[in-house]
Every structure is written in C-alpha cells, then in structure tokens.
Length: 456
Image (cartoon, rainbow, N blue to C red; front, side, top):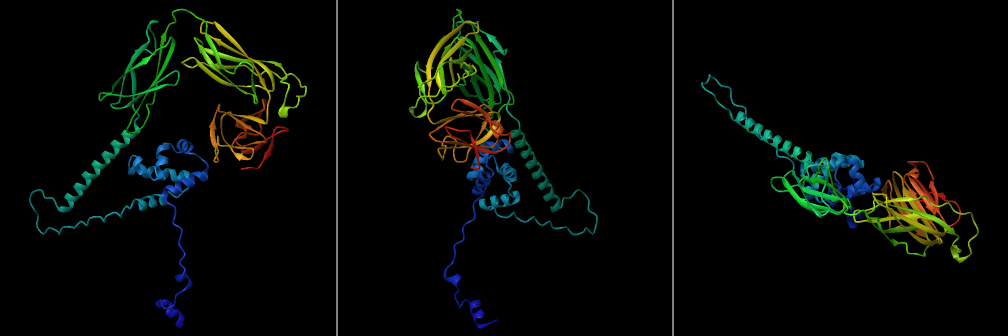
C-alpha cells in the first residue's frame, strides 16, 4: 500500500467525491410504483377492477397509499399480491416495501421452552408442566384467531339478501286514481336498499335493525317499473339478485300520444349531419324518426356552389325508447342537402301522432362520428391536438357508444380494435377500416379517402 493510499484510508486526503457529494435520487414509494406500473400497462382503474376482481376504490387507495380505506391488513396483503402479479411486479418485493413503509418491526423471537428434568421417581396424580400450559394457551389463541378470520371471510364473501313482501306479486294492477304505492320488504339489518324506477331515478334507504324496510314511490298512468336491490354498507357487496316490480295504473280515457319536438327547430341549418332530435311524447310507448330528401342545400364548404350529385339514399329510420317522464332523444345522421325529418309517436293502443321538421345540412370542415361495436380503446387528435373529450391517455368505450368529433382540417383516430370501431365521415358511413383486435391509426380529411398512419 502506498503512502497516498494509506493517507486516503485514514481520511487525510480528500477525494473529489468527498468534495462534491452527488445526491442520490430517492426510490419511488409503493403507491408511485403501482400507479406507474398501471399506466405502463395502459389500463384504467375500472379495467383493472374487471381483470383482478378487486374493487376500483381499493385499487385507488393502494395507489394513493390511503390504507385506511382498505378492510384490513390481511386483505391489503392479498390485494397487493394479486395487483402486483397483474401489473408484472414481484409480489414478495411489493409486500416487503409495504411493510417497510408502514414501519413494521421484525417479529419477536419465539419463546424458549425449558425442558423439565427427568423424573427420578413416579409421581401420583395429574400434573401439568409449564411447557404443556404454554402449548395449551397457544393452541386456544390460534383456534380463536382462526375462528375470527373465518367469520370475517364469511362476512365479506356473503352478499346481502333482498326480498319484497308488498306487493306480493311481480306484476300488480291498481285503480286509475292511485298516485303512489308503499313498497315493503326485508334484507340484512342496516343494509342500504336501492330502488330504481323506469326513468333511471334512484332512491336509497336504510333497513332497520330487524332488516325490514318500506318506501313510498310515486306512480304515473301506465306501466311503472321498479328494480330493488340491497348493498351491505360494511362490505359494499351488492345482493346477488334484483327484484323486479311492475305496477300498472290504467288510463281513464284512451288518448293519442301528446307529441312535442324541442329539437331541431323548423328551418334549422347544420354544419354537420349529427342532427339532435329530442322532445316529449306522453302516452307513447315508442318514437320513430325518419327523413326524406328534399333537394340540394345550394352551398358547400367555403360557400362555393355545390356540384350536382345523385340523390342521396335516406337514412334508415331510428326507433327511440321513451323515458318514464315521456322524454326522448337521439342523434340522427344526415348527409348534405335539404331534408324533412318525420317524428312519429305510437301509443300502446296503436294510436299515433306525427310531426315534421325541415332542416338543411351543409357540411363545413370535418364531422366524424365514431361508433363502438363491442369494446375498443381510442385516442383522438383534432387538427393535430389531443382531443380533450377523450384525453391524452385515451379511453376505453363499450358497445353502442357514439362519439362525434368536428375539425377544420383533420381528425386522427387511434383505435385498439379496428374491427370494433365504425366511422361516419360527413354523413357517409365508412364502416370499420380494419380487422377486429388490431390497433390502427386513421387520418380523416375533408377530401380524399382515410389514410392509415403510425401516430401513437
């Protein structure tokens, strides 16, 4: 060893490292690791909930480090292990970091059992050594703890029950003068009873200590649908079944549907073909929307005269369900030109009421309607900028979702399943542009066919 090395060992010589210490970047916390791993996987909390069977609120609590929101340490460790496996992380390492961040100390050492000395002479009567007493106490503690765990597991695994005692039948008829009804039934003590009517309105009440509940619900003439379910407030589990109740209030006089149209207004002009059709149809079971072509609009993008073209094919009629309050609403796709929209409301007795609206459609720029058939993740750029409607991370949509995007120059769509994503450009249906399950990106402009790009 040289003199310089000996001095450096004793600390007499200061190195460059000693003069300029480099600050180490702190390792990410456990919530940060879980959040980053999920974002790398490209899923949201609701997708993770469906894949792991762990409620989204618990997954969110793990990613926030809010362990008080979780049911207990036993379940927390199970959630962490399953979530780590789902995100491609080492579960043992995740559990070790969780314990370390919680500040758990190492387990106490096992008690030392002193072996009694051999007896030199036989003893009379029943005797207990200290080791036997300790073993018996430990056995009792383990049995009690195992019983407690079993009770907790059964409690969290068993969903609440729900039953309706009044009305006694699933379908009931009342007099035409009845305007309300008292629903009664039983469930587990303290459970939350959820009552939803046909219009989507919900009532939430708490059952008594004996499990009984009752609630007065309003009735309207015609069919009144109610769906009753229960939720355990401690475990947040929902009842396995939902009780369907139908109460019919007859109409005193058969009347034709009372139809009003709020949108579109007569003679309205639109720069895209997604015409909002909405209104009220009282005493009606359904509304049918159709359209008839009435001629060219006389203008196109930029105000130049439109070129003569073949008469466009009228779109297929759309049947719209009527809400419990009589409201209806639907988008209705039309190509460029003048159109007469016909709205027909039909009652249960076959009587109908019809109203017409004249509208003009003159496209300007791009109007792209995206319809999901099945399930697909999409991300959208409007004139080169990320669409705020979908967000920078994209979003997963399920069957039947319809999205409309407008732009001046271009709309670019990245889809995770090309075969499940259908496009309508300026009123012209393009269908899907690729096979199912294949991610693709398509660029749409006012003129020309869609182009496939590599935009991520």
